[in-house]
Image (cartoon, rainbow, N blue to C red):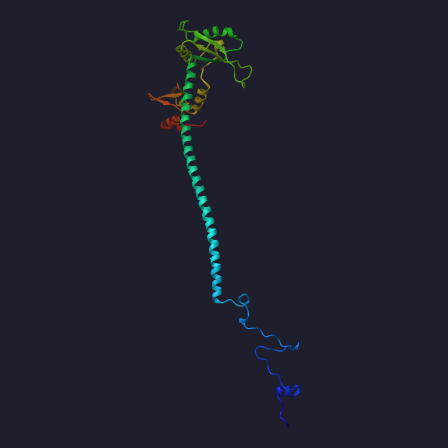
Length: 299
């Protein structure tokens, strides 16, 4: 029996002599029957094509990285330069604002000092003007309760009779009135309430004696039984006196003597010692010293 043939030998025997494998990358195309083109060597391409299609070398990569680094650094320098300029501009603006703020603070402090000085001067002038107004009224007495049936022409004779009743030891020449008339009444009072009468006594000592006699008189004749005497004071003085009401209330409760002074102040006599209270703060401090603040009630 003849020995078996190998596959390669069988191929040769069936199709003839076997073809040699193409060398140098040359292959035949089974589909078209024409041989494929052999790629050229790298040296056959221009550098531009090689740089675009071939892998970059280490030197080329380093060059590209250096170019990229340079570009980024230049961009950073430009950005940081702009930022530095903006920061400098902001710093200059902040310095200008701080300088302006300092100037405004100094001007404000000057205005505050001037305001305090003007306020003190205003209060001093107001006190003097109020004192002058009160002094111009110091001989006046405000009489409340005279019926409207007493005509204006009869007011002088009516009050002269009352003055003789209150001060029987005085001469008629001392009981003189410079003027006497009615004054408008507040709108909130009823129409049936008679208007007050304002009279100016010629002598100040007679005026003070009349007020003292009215305070101590127990009873008066029927035509004068309901009359009340008040000193004629300015509106500012009346308002200031109302502020002292909590203090004067405690003084009256403890039977501590006091009287009003001019310009407005409260003269308190306690244990033979005279204390001058020029404002409510002084009054509260005095009450605290005398251990009387427990009875204080704010207005």
